[in-house]
Image (tube, rainbow, N blue to C red; front, side, top):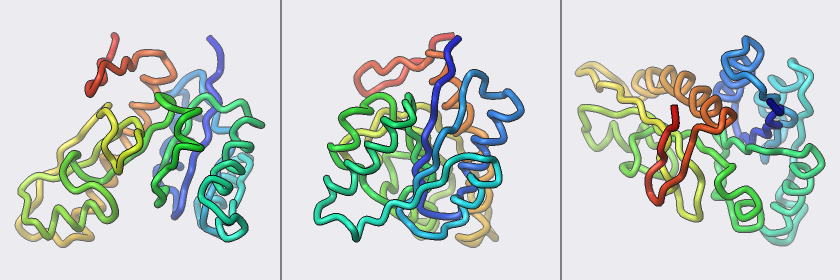
Length: 204
């Protein structure tokens, strides 16, 4: 079976990146390799995580480009140079534009800390907590041209406890993110994810 080369786009500390790396290294995700980690934020800890595992770590500064398309063209150049077959958004805090999305349609996956379609966009955990939901969770989905609107691959529920704070709830959601994101990557690498309109069917 061919190796799937993976790129991970990040903006923060990279705990979901770490869960992907760990699952590849322990062979839970077979036939996959993270080739490059790209951040739009200089000095983020996610880049340090990549370096610790001998993965190329790249900061792409949007301020160097006059347009979003120019910024994404540089990212696309890096992806193509590494023969990337799957792009993961792991705490990447930008909406992906068509320059980057079109070449990777059906091959770009995001993790979101809420049960979509509820509470898309930034701070999904805080949105859910403020709304007073009794159940929250996380979602792995394919990326489309909307904000957290792509076909859903896996979701995991997290019960909101009476004494929860937004921070405590976010931590418990993150624990589940670290489980379902690698699982979605494994299914993709094994060719088991079939996009059928709005639905993602899992071939077993």
